[in-house]
Picture: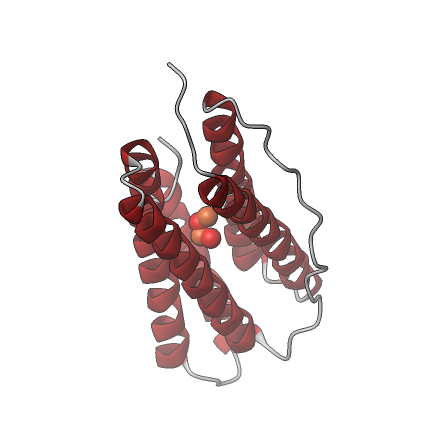
Length: 177
Ligand code: OFO
C-alpha cells in the first residue's frame, strides 16, 4: 500500500533523519571524550547511545522508503570534542535530548493537523523513547549532584553511569523493538 506524505511532512522527516544522525555523531564524540578522560563506564554509555541513535535514524529511512519517498542523507555539523567536565557533558546531553523531543513533538503536531494517521502512529515510538531517554539523563544528572565534587567523585560517577548503562541493556529500555 502506498502511503501519501505531504511535502511538508517529507521535509520534516528528512530533517529528523539529520537530527538523529547528528545525535549519533555527538554521542560518539562524547564516548571518546570519556575515553580520553579514563571514564570507561561513561564511554560504554555513549557508545551504546550512539548506536541507538543511528538505529533511530535508519527507522526513518525505512519509513520514508515504505512511503515511496527517497530519504535525504544529511551532512552533519561537527560535534565539539571539548568539554570542561563531566557535569557539562551530561548537561549538553540533556539539552540535546530536549531539542530532539521538541522536534518530534512538532512533527507529531503536523501529522495531527494533516490527519496523517500513519505518521502519527510511526512517531509514537519516538515520543516514548524521548521520554525514557530524558528520564535516564535526568537521573544521571541528579546522581552526579549527589556524588558531588570530592576527590574520587569521577570514579563514583563513572561507576554509577556504568550501572545505569547495564540496567538499560538488561531491560532493553531505550532499545529498538
Ligand atoms: Fe533518537 O533518541 Fe534521543 O535523540
